[in-house]
Amino acid sequence: MTTPMQTTTTTAIWQSVSRSAACGIIFVDSTLGATTLLFMAATDARHYIATLDVGTTTIRCFVYAAQTNGEPVTVGTAYDHVDLIYPAPGWVEINPDKLWNSVLQTIQKATEDAKLTIEQLTCLAISTQRNSFTCWNRSTGQVYHDFITWKDLRADQLVKDWNGSFTLRLLKLGASFLHFFTRSKRFLAGSVIKLMNPQVTLRLAWVLQNNPALQEDLKTGAVLYGTIDSWLLYRLRQGTDRSRQVEHISDVTNCTSTGIYDPFGQEWAGWALNLFSIKKELLPKVVDNSYDFGHVHESLLGARIKIAASVSDQSASLWGTCCFGRGDVKITMGTGSFLNVNTGTKCLASVHGLYPLIGYRLQGAAGTDINYLMEGSSNDTGSIIEWALSVGLFEDPADSATMAMSVPTTDGVLFVPAFSGLGPPIRDDNAGSGFIGIKPSTRKEHMVRALLESLAFRVALLYDCALKETGFSFTSIKVDGGVSKNDFICQTLADLTGIAVERGEVTDSSAMGAMFMAGLNAGVWSTKRQLMDVRKVAKTFSPNAAGRAQRLKQMRAWERAVERFKKWYILEDIKNLD
Image (cartoon, rainbow, N blue to C red; front, top):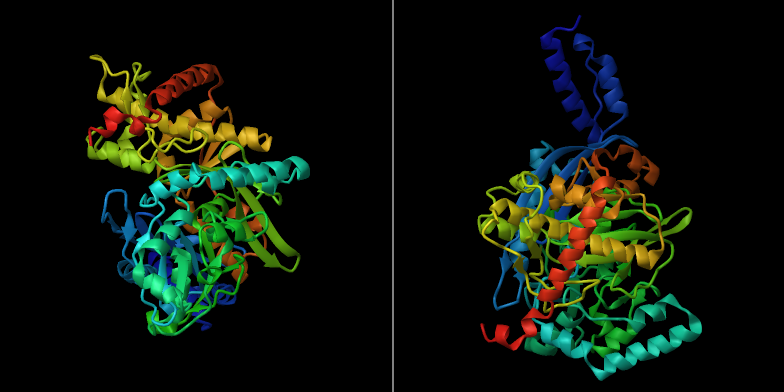
C-alpha cells in the first residue's frame, strides 16, 4: 500500500527525473520502490518546446512538454501587452525596441514559469502577425522607422488612387485577356486584383517615398525590409552585436499575404516590384517552414536555442486546428476574423475577393509538402467586442453571450461592424458602423444580441463566398481565437451555415500550431496524423434545422442594413461633420 509520503516523494522524483533527462542526465534511486518509475522517465525524456506568439495586441510564450509521439502539456506561460502607437490619424505603429525587449522577457519568464533553464529547451517556434513591417540598416542594425502595422491607413490615398488608375485597369484587362486564352488561374486572379491597406505593398511604397534617410542608404544597398518574423529571425540569430550580418530570410507563409508575392509562381512578384519601384535586394530570401532557421544566439538568453519553425499566425492556427486535408475550413476570430479553406495542392483564384495563399510548405524525405489556402477576412471582430466593453454594453465579454440569449430576438435592432470598412465580398472601405432600428422598447440586451449576430453574419458571408469559389462541400467548421469562446456566436454560425461548428480545448491555437510544426520539424512527432490524434475538441455546436430559416431571414435583413451604411464616409454631409 502506498502512503501519502510515498506519493509525494514519487511526484517530486518524477519532476526531477523528467527535467534531468531533458539535459541528458540519468540517475536511479530505488528508495520507496521508485526504480521502475525512474527507469521509464530516464529512457523516455520529455521535449520542451517554447512557442513565441506575437499578435497585434499581445505577446505570449508557452512552454510545452511532450514525450516523443506523445501528447503535449503546457508547463509554462508568460504574456505581455503590445503597445500600439497612434502618431497620426489612421497611423498604427509598434516601437521595435519595446517589442524586442518584450520578446526576450516573455521567453525568459515562460521558461522560469516552467521551472526550466534555457538550456533545457529543445527548440523555439515562432508565430507572428502578418504584414506589419519595418526597414533596417544591414550594417548597423538600426531601424529607419517603427513597425507599420497591418491596421495602418497612411497609404489609404495611394490605395484609392492605384485602384482607380488607368495602369491597374490596363493590367487587369491584360490578365483577363490572357485568362480567356489560357484559362490559367494565375491570370484569373490578376484580372480581379484589388490593392488593400492590410497588404504591405503600398505602405512600403509610401515609406520608400517619404523616408529621406532610408532613400539615401538605399543607394548603397544597405537597407533591408522585413515583416515581424523576418526582423525577429535576424535579431535572434544576430545576438547582441547589431553589426553582425546574418542571412536575411522570411518564411513563405509570412510572404504570401504581403501583396508583392506570387503564390502561383512561388516567388516575389516581379510585376509588383517594378510597378511600385520596390528593389528586390530589399527583400528577404523566402524559405520553407521546415528551413534550418539556425539558433537564438547565446548572448541573448544565456544559451543557444534551436529555432525549429517560423510561421504566420493564420497558418499556425491552421496547424493548431489540424486542418491538414483538402476541404478543411477554419475560422479564427480574434482582433479580426479570418476564414481559411485548405484547397490542397492547387492554388485557386477568386472573383469575390477571397485571397489565394500558401498555407505551409515543408521539405521532407517524400519531397515537398505544400498546401494552399483561400482566405477571406473581416478586420473587425475582437475590436467590436472591446468597443462594446468600453462603452458599457457589458462589464465582461464573457457576459455577452448570456445577455444575448436572455432575449428571443433583437427587437428589430441591427448592427453593422465596419470600424475598418467592410471587406469581401462587400469590399467597401468607406462603409460606416452603427445600430439601426432602435426604438423605445430597445434594451441593452437587444443591442448586445444584434452586435454578436452581426459578427456571425459577417463570417457567414465569407463562408458563402468559399462555397461559391471552391465548389467544396464542407462538413464542419473549426473555430479558434478569443471570440470563439462566445457560445452565442458559435451557435449562430452553425445555424447560418447548416453545418457543425467545432471548438477545440485550446482556442488560442496559433501558439499550439507553431509548436506542432516545430515538433514535427524537430522529430518530436513523425506524422501530421499524430498531431490530429492529440488535439482535443471542447464543444461541438450542431445546427438547429428548425430555426435556420429564421436565422437566414435575420441575415437578409442585416444585409439591407449594410446597404444603408455603404459608402458612408464619401457622403459630403458626413465628411463635413469632421
